[in-house]
Image 1 (cartoon, rainbow, N blue to C red):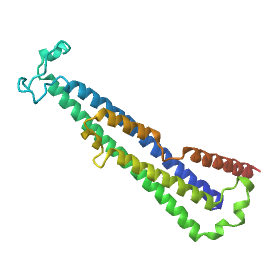
Image 2: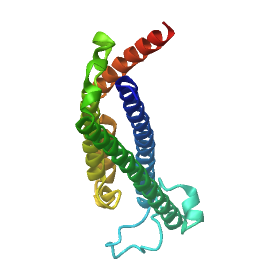
Image 3: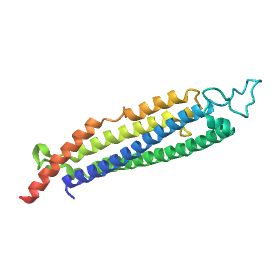
Image 4: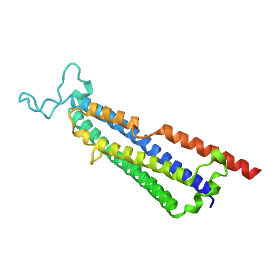
Length: 223
């Protein structure tokens, strides 16, 4: 396999993994948003329950005030049932988030395998770095260059994935133990949307370089 063909193969593999990572990440953001909505709904539901430390109230029944929906006075245990249903939905969503994090971690492991494979190939295949690498002139991407780019990008995805996992804790969503759950979830969502450890501009530059090389290869083959 020529050096150019190997460069394109490495990039195509990484590009596919990058797409898989972003798809899993996008899904996880939707799951987090769903959890945030469910938490807010549960907080509103539980607001109709009496304060458990008030000796003058029966904790088994909701408070029926002027703002209490009529249905709650007609079905006294509705608040408890709805709260349990919302809690179960939150737990299911947390499991989905854990699965998304596992998928993200698996993609990163594949990126690191590709990175290590490229570096190993560079160390063991020095002849491939010879004159053929300059055949396309300024459009050419050497194996060393591509291996270095993959190393840089894979490392950034590794760091970003670790930071995302840390932001929700080992159990998948430790922030749910926080009294300020809505605020904590909002901060977590902001962090997940930021992708602050990825250099997407650098990825775009690499992608354009590869497109240019691919055009050159196609024209050369046609000629």
